[in-house]
Image (cartoon, rainbow, N blue to C red; front, side, top):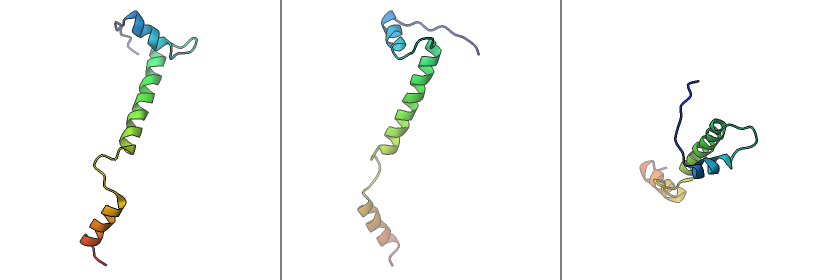
Length: 68
């Protein structure tokens, strides 16, 4: 694994370290935070009602397209 250096303010470093447990590296903490953020984005996407219509409206449209 290639290692790199990023510059952070002490305030940001302290905030990141508050998410960690004893012995956990900043790399481990940031990986865990990233994983949680990805899951939250997916949850928001799946739970969003943007672009969706109520089921009653969908049934009416389907009945118009495919009458019984």
